[in-house]
Image (cartoon, rainbow, N blue to C red; front, side, top):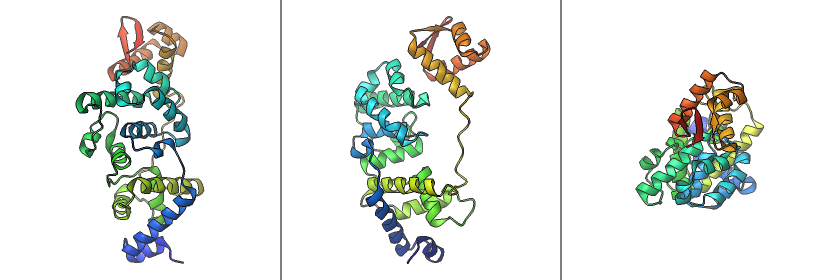
Length: 280
């Protein structure tokens, strides 16, 4: 039986290797492909929401939040006009509150600059708040069927497994050309979904598949990120709170609380009037 990895060692990315690789991915996807609500739509807004939610968050945690978020804020206009408190309230449970703030900022930019229609231009997408190169490429592929080339953790696992499994120190620079060469341009959206699902399977079964681009997330417990999240949660429960009350409730030194509040204020989460703090 022909093997992609073996053929690649002798033929590199020859048409036969590309065809065999694509057949392997499609075969798995046809039998085991996963279904998610954001895969059932081409609505650019829905896809932006899902891609931002999926940043650093497992799909199993995103599904219910995605449905709830879309229900509360069904389009760019609704999200742009919503109070930040409402947006953060619905977002709770996903973590990384900066993503919710950036998502609303993106909605406001799309409404004010593009009349509520998400642009398909990749360079424009990259400049939207909280989007960045990967998310812009993913949105362009899933919302506009553009043949963008990008890598995330599951895609990285697929190409490491098929092409570099006996090699150490594989980088995204090694992988990206193969992502482009093997891209099935007849069905870009589904092709990337197939890569995601195959990669998820590999990561479950072959935990040793890694690359030098993989980085473990920093510890959350006790981090400033956890403390900032706790401050936001308290402010969502109350209309306002004083710095003294925050320090006492969170068992933090006043100076530490001031530093965290300064960060949250500068990022646009809160307003500080004297000693009183509110969601902006």
